[in-house]
Length: 279
Ligand SMILES: C[S@@+](CC[C@H](N)C(=O)[O-])C[C@H]1O[C@@H](n2cnc3c(N)ncnc32)[C@H](O)[C@@H]1O
Image (cartoon, rainbow, N blue to C red; front, side, top):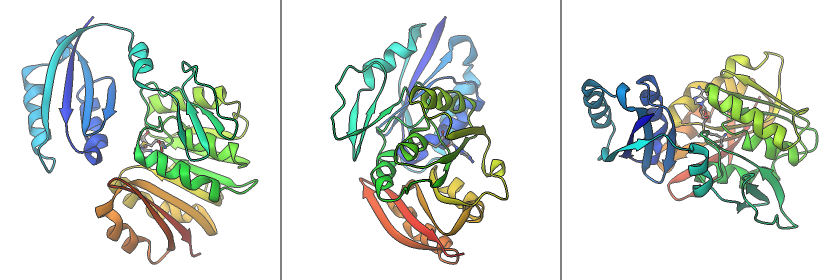
């Protein structure tokens, strides 16, 4: 099989909307790097009209977004490609390790074994790292946790390893659901985490969580915020990320009635907001 590989330059905050649109157009397989999305499509499926559609799509994003490179590639072992680019790393109290890494686990770290494949949540992105660093100070023994937009399930697995007794993880992306389940089994925490395809509608009306984690992009967070608040206990904690510095005021304003902002952490342009439900 022959594929067309496109390397597209655009700011990190537009990766998800771009990937959503490209998936609809039939692109299959995405890698996210700093300010770049790499994607593939079977050669026969990329018509001239699609190319124009992509150019138009990119013109609609603020800033200079463009196709940096286009090449024809033959079928290959995609997982092997991943193995070359993703390694083990320390993040706060955790050691995040793909199964192919032979790096020894430091004695003082909590192991999270994650094979990311094509899902988001390798620990390479600032937003995942910000939440992982906040988690040890937030998860208490026997907490009930909601992981909205679970990706690889990295945050759910971390929450259980810190003592959470029950996690409801959901994601709208079919591939992430499959990958989340694989990683949960890999870490032996499948009795404590339930993974469901969908969004906040899958949270039972009776569920009141101690903690909700959401690393999704700004517009999705703003849309789901009322549901997030409803699913928390009074005084329950929420960590929101997938946000950039310029989203700070907007999110604060939207939270003000229902939640108290406790802390905001930042890494590069990315932020994570810790808030507590008022009622
Ligand atoms: C940035 S990734 C976060 C993955 C992981 N939780 C982490 O922190 O690394 C966002 C995830 O949210 C999912 N997502 C996007 N919109 C969603 C929605 N409306 N409801 C649930 N999940 C959604 C995406 O499919 C993606 O897997």
